[in-house]
Amino acid sequence: MKATIRRPRRPTGHWVYYSLEEGLLWPCPVHWEWESSYGGWLPFYCSPTLDYIAADPSKVVKRPKTAVSTTATVARLREIKLQGREE
Image (cartoon, rainbow, N blue to C red; front, top):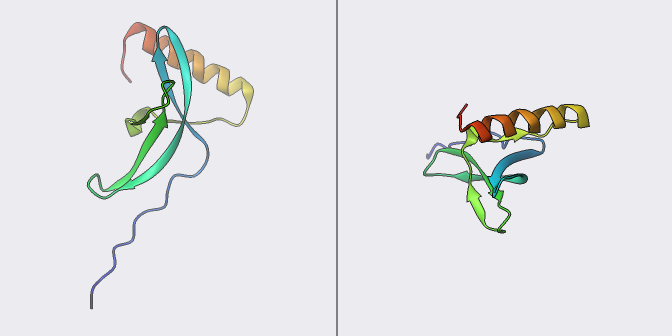
């Protein structure tokens, strides 16, 4: 009898990847796809050029529920990307 391997649940909620394109910070929506070779759920985002690109899972942000926290998150990410730092 073959044992079935169950994959973990897909991350819930609305996720965003912030991309810096030509000096503008773009909030790109993320969808998760199971990648067997990666061994987990991998985030893909739709870039401003309408291409789907795999994102670094550590840089994907769960979209906050309030506008105040969204503004704070965008300001913090803009600061980090413009200074060239990596988290």
